[in-house]
Each structure stands twice: as structure tokens, then as C-alpha cells.
Amino acid sequence: MKLTELGEQRCPMAQALGEIGDAWSLLILREAFYGRRRFSEFVEHTEAQKTVVSARLKQLVGAGILERERYSEAPTRHHYVLTEKGRDLAGVMVMLTEWGRRWVDRDEPEVTLVHAPCEHDLRPQLQCAECGDRVADGSITARFSRHQTGSPG
Image (cartoon, rainbow, N blue to C red; front, side, top):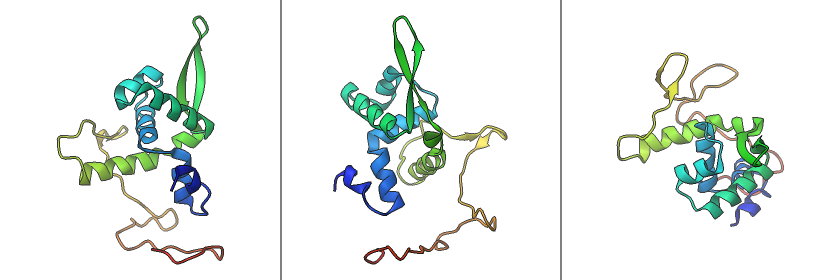
């Protein structure tokens, strides 16, 4: 299935994946969250081809996740910044990083996320916004709308 087709599904996860794109887009977003803004920085730190970075930046700008801003008049130069929509991906990026650290990373991690106010390593967890309880394995269920077709799983 093509990513453009994912965005047409009635599933929020599929639609989000259709917006974000692919692994290269996630790596560009990782770098944007680390404070990188320039095209050359995205190329250097993702190790992607320039054509790949260019295409993904165009897609992320088109989706409203990044914004292209001019930072120099002469010569004209632009950089990329996260929009509100892009900054809202912070939780996803943190959880994906933590999952990779726990299950995939086989070496000493290149980066450790730190909670700036207390300066301790960040170990994110899910919490219910209503009751405040920590969300544990097996405590999430799905409630499907009447528009849902097929069965889950």
C-alpha cells in the first residue's frame, strides 16, 4: 500500500503515517527536535541523499509539519522550523526513541533524552489524562465508531 493511500483510511494512525511519510521523514523530524534547521544539517545528520532530504522537506512543509523560513536576504537562504502541528509530534518521537533504546539499540545510545527541569534521564510513560493512572500493558481497549468496517486485528 502506498503512503498516499494510508491517508485515505478512516484510521487516525494510518492518516498520521500518510502525513508524516516514511523513515527519512522521521529522521528529519528527529533532527528538527534536536534543534537542527538547515538543509545541510539534515543531510549530514540523517545521512540521506540530498534529493531524498529535499523531497521529504517539501512533503513535511506541505503537510504543515515544518515551515520554511527565510533567515538571510543576501544571499537568500531558508531554514526549516517545526510548526505547532510538528511540535505536537514530540510525544510520538520520544516514545519511538524510548522503544528503540529498549528493544533495538544494541550499542551505547548515541543520545540520551533528558528531562531539562530535573536533569534526569527521561523515561516516558503513558498516563490517562482523566484519572491520572499510569497506562499499563493490557489496559488499553479500542472503541470503534459505527463507521468502522471489518474487525480489529
